[in-house]
Image 1 (tube, helix red, strand yellow):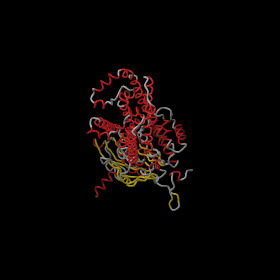
Image 2 (cartoon, chains in turn blue, brown; image 1 turned 45 degrees about the vertical axis):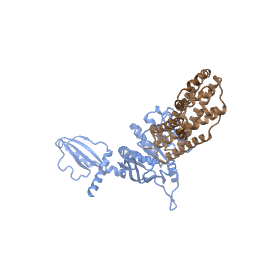
Image 3 (cartoon, each protein chain N blue to C red; image 1 turned 90 degrees about the vertical axis):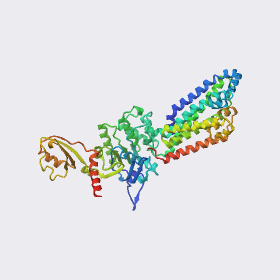
Image 4 (spheres, rainbow over the protein chains, first blue to last red; image 1 turned 120 degrees about the horizontal axis):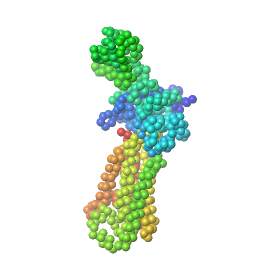
Length: 323
Length: 262
């Protein structure tokens, strides 16, 4: 069994007891690029042993945050620490405790997969390359072809192996399933769950709400460089609003929505026979009532990011209105 | 990192070295013709404007070292290898950023300056390779045309060439470290190199411009003289080495302290 110190890579004592530092702690983290874009006053912590989803649309600031974690960018203000180590000033020590998978699998095209892993393993502890070969075998990946001849999925496997091969306590993943087919995505998410069960921490950046909901314990939502929320996944699921489209033989009865807080009417067309509803939380009561109606067709697409933002921006708007 | 950098640079360095050497060797084969008609060539060259001769590095072409200096070492060979040094220097940081491989490379637990220094050392080894290939070609050419070059002359020439190329590569890598753009770094470097060359040429035109020699790196680039005398101007070489060291240190510090990617 691994000790806490092994997980974190360093000892932390509090009142004589060994405590586990947060895997990542961001305090008022701000990085402003020329032109004014960037991330602003991010405050969050990732607890050791959890899968932490970092959710936001493209351009929201996810990659910038990850680059700060990796010590590639210097914060303009605030700080970010990895297992208590400052990601900029102590980046070498911090990076020894993490594995990173970039979203864009651009690698050294002329190298073979084996040469690439050997090159990176040279910066990791002894025995790393043996574990890399074992992982390649588990993932059914041939390391002999040059990287330029590998499919996007296999490149992603190479990247995943280089992130896991030194058995780091923290995995930082930047939209890692972008190039994978649905089966590959499912296998990848299972692998992350396995890593969590081994005590690893996972920081998973994604714009795919469904993917994050499947495996994350907690989620931070970022938009336009600012954190909108940090929630448990269950709470996020309860708060988000999904659209439902109904085609009806006749309009809904009067009083259909009475006493039902889960659903509200967004729009009604064609004399009330085509309606759009907003559904928050479980649709159980709504479906029971719909069973009494003349429903011709029903479309209930998976929740997307907008469904989350809808909730939070309503809150922000309400707050603005109050002030 | 050093091994990988050498591997990356290997074929490029090989082709530049081979190209430079083949050119030197091929030109050497023309020397017997020039030697036989030395008087005619000397008269012909004497009527050319001094500035034109300076621009193209013309000297006494009746000796093997003079001929090879004029035809290869003073202008054509350095132009070719300066292109290599500029391309290699501009790539040290910018290529990783432009190719999108910087994130993975810099996610390893190593100080950035160490990664960059390995690339700089690999480039220096590549440049030394081009110099050694040139020296070898000079010797082979001399053997074939029944001329001779002194070993101490070859050594001195190699020192001058290497120090000069190190300097060009070093300020190019500094620009690469500062800009993260191969095009910008190469452009800035070529601007500095061409300006330096023009200053050196203008400095030969008259006493009032002589001071420009003091600010041109080409003043220290005297491979023909080194080949002929077997000695180097220690002050010039020391200045080139100092410039190289300063540029490399600045490049390392800049890369260590700046945002690695935009």
